[in-house]
Image (cartoon, rainbow, N blue to C red; front, side, top):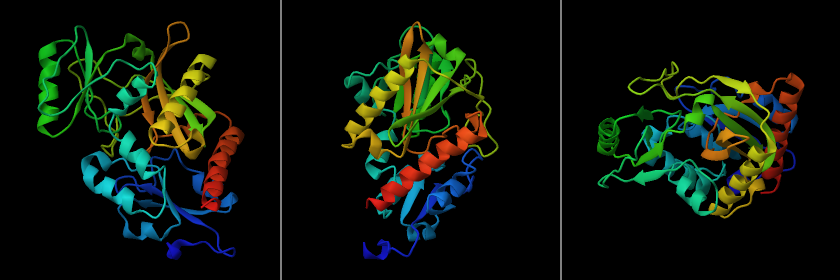
Amino acid sequence: MSGHRQSSSRRPSVVLASCQQLPNSDGDDDGLVEALARAGVDARWLPWDDPTIHDADAVILRATWDYPERLAEFIDWTKSVHRLINSPAMVQWNHDKGYMLDLERAGIPIVPTAVFAPGDHVTIPDGEVVVKPAVAGGSRGAARFIEPAGALAHSALLHRDGHRVLVQPFDPLITAGETALVYLAGERSHAFSKGPMLPQPGESGELDESGLYLVEKLTPALPPESFWALGDAVMKAAAHAVGVVPSDLLYARVDLVGTAEAGPKLLEFEAIEPSLGWRQIAAATDRGMAMDRFAAATAAALAGH
């Protein structure tokens, strides 16, 4: 598209895509615009549905957290953007948590997962379970159940609203929280812990004031090598699923549960708009260096196309 061809005298421009409810994200990405400027890239925030977003050389998905409620519109929009980072193919594959089954087939150890489309007969395993929509953000719509009747009723409500449903056994290790591994341009960057988000059975979680996600308690983390090794394998399998290599992904987050003794399992892989936990990098200098790596990878991607 000639209208977006860069000249040697013009700095490339990107938009960090957000949503109307949180036009500048939730504050965790504060500093990215400045990091991109240091890398020679002009950046600004805009909601993804702002028509002027198409004027940029590229759009980076960062806080498009209302898309589950506007899914068809959002998917169409991703295909209309001149250059979307991460790619429309990744969005198409990663937006529905059924991708977990693809990763399991690729040999990734996952939290056991069953997927049921509307009209399917839902089966609930023995013991405590988690039922959630296959397309959702911020843990909205996820609930824990001890009795099968409650799990089936929640599944029926999700099916009624057109959702595919995921059913997973509740892993007691999740009460210790999740470990989030952050990758930038396919390389290990940093990690943080997410406190348990699912409320007790029969209770509702606390939503952020935007209503887009459950409130999280985040802390810095230093995962064992076994966690990073699984994260590396997940990155390779996920990239392969859409025909790219890990370095083609500007960012991704791999969420694991488990312990060093029991071994980790994949809970979720996010490459559309995950929080990257910049504020959980304890030292400001290290945080700035990580953001600079993000910015340098962005500049390199723009220069390569």
